[in-house]
Image 1 (cartoon, rainbow, N blue to C red):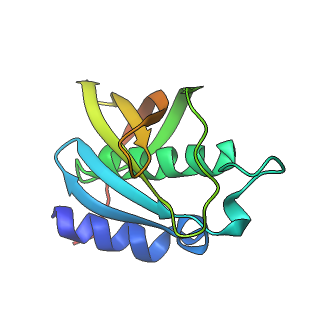
Image 2: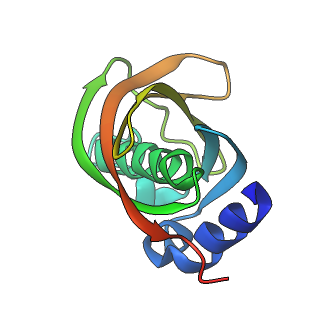
Image 3: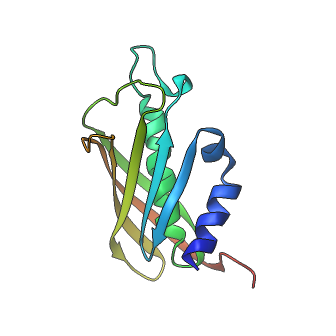
Length: 138
């Protein structure tokens, strides 16, 4: 099931795909997503754009939230930007989402983004809504 969700999101999340992001793993209530930076990800002062890191965070969150097998969407997000990410083409940034709490219809996750040196760049708390509709029809 997790491999199917991983393939589904990597193939169908066009925004993430067009921005160089890929889900690398999904388990029950957890996921990892990676961004390989290019110049388009840098802001005017030469560091990774906060929006790029937030999109990576949101993509990892979506994977973890949908890991339960039902269509799910975000409801709320709070992100702290702790350190700047270096604006170097080819640099990799990794977001890891981990379930904190789950009820029948909602789930809360911690999502951290780290650079290649393991420095914590962002920390997010994200809440999602889990529908009754299965992610897949079969």
